[in-house]
Amino acid sequence: MAKPQTRAPRRPSGSGSRRRRDRPSFPPPAPPAPSQGFPELKNDTFLRAAWGEDTDYTPVWCMRQAGRYLPEFKETRAAQDFFSTCRSPEACCELTLQPLRRFPLDAAIIFSDILVVPQALGMEVTMVPGKGPSFPEPLREERDLERLRDPAAVASELGYVFQAITLTRQRLAGRVPLIGFAGAPWTLMTYMIEGGSSSTMAQAKRWLYQKPQASHQLLRILTDALVPYLVGQVAAGAQALQLFESHAGHLGPQLFNKFALPYVRDVAKRVKARLQEAGLAPVPMIIFAKDGHFALEELAQAGYEVVGLDWTVAPEKARERVGKMVTLQGNLDPCALYASEEEIGRLVQKMLDDFGPQRYIANLGHGLYPDMDPEHVGAFVDAVHKYSRLLRQN
View 1 (tube, rainbow, N blue to C red):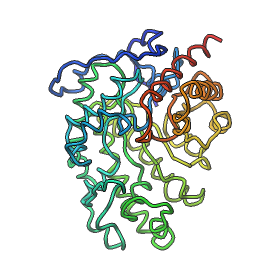
View 2 (cartoon, one colour):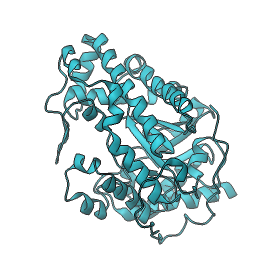
View 3 (cartoon, rainbow, N blue to C red):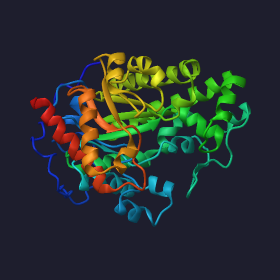
């Protein structure tokens, strides 16, 4: 896959190691503009690492960096229910920018949710406080697939996500790249059949064993919906894409290779082809398959530039298994942020030593939790910048 021909200037060194973090200001609201009118990117370190190019330091961002651990996030969200917030481009833009006002992160990720896709397919989804997502009428029988809308129409139902991306690209003013995302087909399927979260995914897995043809039909529907949705995110301004296969760990190697991996591959292949057909520049794609350590080699060859790791995978062993053809991302245990700031620094140093200085993006092994101290998140970001520069000097 050809890389973009131009690169934005590198961010000046020394900006990530200050203990007291500056709070950058963002320009006043501006109306969304077409992609050719976006401000020039000033810090492309994350994108260069994703493409496998050398960087002056290790870039860092956090899954769920726009989240309930931030007081300002809770204040912004207080007046609206979850999915109403997701449907407000203005609110999504604001929530996306909030962590960048606190921390010198190297990427932003648009505030949204993976379950907007089942909603766009016609399923009702609510977010129940203290419980999580709920589908009042989950898929139970094969005939229930007839309730789903044409996947080709999904992107037109999700224009509010595209508007949020365009607005956020403008207001970022080129500070860092913006990541778009979606849930992978198997992960979306689990929610649609289970009706919400599950510790076993027994109902979804029952489909795999008892209704394999219907399972493949549903996974194809989801893939057909995801491809134009992800392409639409790039057209709206996303500069990288992450696919979340959050429930990979519920599948062993055999089921994963049959019901998850083929669709993960198909998403990457078709998104890249559609971008080229549309005359859009290629963007790096990230696959994050939580607890999918049994499929690292396969994921590294699935068509993604970056493979995200959870905290159960030893970085040096992961590098041995995937080689140097992909960038790795991760993988500090999120609960490590409950440690002291000094201990966080030591853990980050060990993680950076294990991953090595290049072809690497620092992140957590999963998303931030609501009760985490923002100062400890800042300590994590600062430690990555500080120690990665020292690692390159040595």
